[in-house]
Image (cartoon, rainbow, N blue to C red; front, side, top):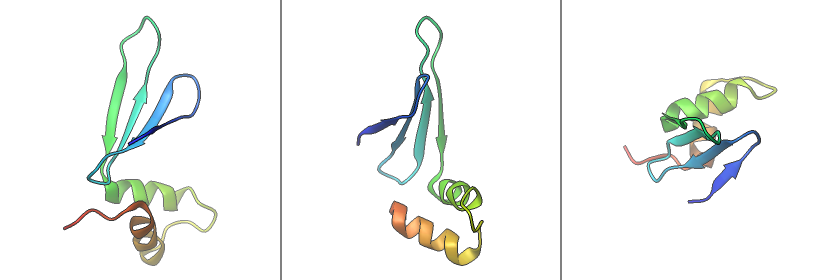
Length: 70
């Protein structure tokens, strides 16, 4: 999977299980990495979108992102 570089050393990538890895890489400093589970990533995307989060939009975001198998 590829990474998306935003700026200032921030990288985002989708993991096989649908979670999202967020890394902050700073030359000369230690790197920081967090992993956001797939359902929570869908919630973040919906919550910051114009129309906000509803159950229907959350489900659509999971489907669009690649809902992990249950």
